[in-house]
Length: 338
Image (cartoon, rainbow, N blue to C red; front, side, top):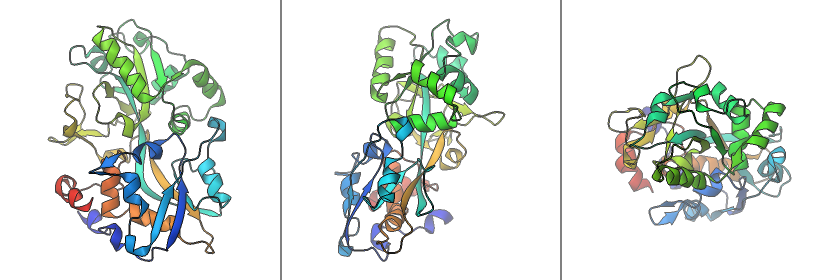
């Protein structure tokens, strides 16, 4: 409550919002291009953020930019650097120059999932509901190809690794899991099938309906995976640290178990404190020029997103807020702020 109470309540409470139309961007396809279309009530996030404080006569227009490949990521930052956009929202901050500043506004991350079936839960149970970073590296470089190489209790079955189509998500996986190793990155590109997350989950669902044990393992952005019950999101073990599953059961306020019914969507949430230590989690930043000759649109937009209203909205569309939202606020108070 103390952290939450320190935040400004609504967009209207942000001061010194400059007048004018401001243009911002994100990598396309990526998290923001997905969540900006999501509805909160009757309006999309894009509509709600276009003119967040009408009396200030400031509008924020979102235009995505695309990089041609993984090696050329970072176009959102490049266009801000060149003065073509006023600011960018990104998790890929390695190429930020000294002329730019950044402010975190939420957390994003990747979830790793395997098939989930109430009738056949041998896969998740034999894995203990978790997987290590080292095992992921071996799987996604083709060094481990059968599930029994991980655990003899698992079926004698080919491992079929899938990756999403978003360059941003793949870049974070390569950074965190493959440690940006060039050889491992080449093996990842050669051996891993890239499908849209929804297509991968539909494939798992179809194979389960056909009575198959799929052998599929996938990963993707949390905003595309939360609220579904086809894939079980595994806890992640990094070295000797305890396994962390940031997805919690609402009623008992505990991490996910393999016995939980994921199809009861309203029973689950992302625990902010757990997510801050989650190996596949990372912050999202607003990146903007330090140059005082330009209006402070980026830093102002960051202030808007970090109000209570902004944090509620971001949590509703699939991001994780910077601080826990008190239970009663999350259930009732966020509705009054939308």
